[in-house]
Image (cartoon, rainbow, N blue to C red; front, top):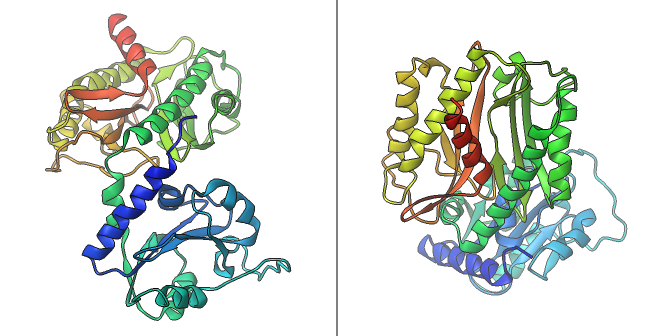
Length: 392
């Protein structure tokens, strides 16, 4: 099975401890919940459902996975760490009531802080995911640990930017699954069907192929393609409609997004031109996805192509972002970004035009940056673009 091995999770904690020592941090808490799960998944493999979670560790010893009572068994099933504790602060995110769990063996932040102090100094606690926490949770954390609490997000963001071959393998599988679902939708006759029906084809096949979850399905047809990140609705898909659909599939905590711009039935020349320009921009930009090349060169190549076509006012956001444990993560470059692509980075193109008369759309494709160029994880997009250009 394609997955991140236990040894790699242990290496991540070792690297975090190295950063802790450099930054005089005595202990670290990595927070996550159902909605912002990427950092917690990265260090423990645990992903809560409607509850919160965290991984707490000092300079030595096994990390402690923190969760809430209903998630205890799932935490033990998913987490690579065996020490699982229950804290009341991590109960259901959406429920203001105090929920009674009569059989739960609960601990609290104060006891956990005392346990860490019994093993060493605790003057500074680093928190990864600090911006994802509620104010009340942060207040209790500070009062219980009685030490300096600092934002440590920068440490894990730096670690996540380049991927191991195991991470790339998980992303490749996520991309394969997304591709299977998407191509099934493209092959189906969806004229006369609702947008919800159409996207259901892609999602259903993706689940059958092994998707852990569908992070999102963006969908719009006809005039609704201009929604940029619209959700599918009961709108009926009509002959000639542009189809803007983006499906983000998660596999073992890694997310690949897949999108091909296409139209159904007898579509107009104006719709065809939108797809023409997007496919051409995709070809223009790809050579710049290479280790050692400044990221701004990719962005400028895409935007200059749109300017040449007189369509720059329909170009509403940068055409590239990172890909990994989140659908969009660092890097997220613009035309003045001086940083260069490095081998091992994984990026997701997001080449888009919105608001044109012929419809709106984009191309989303996951790449691995290599020394000699970019390795696509979505070969069907390359095939589609090649055939489109040949058929012009």
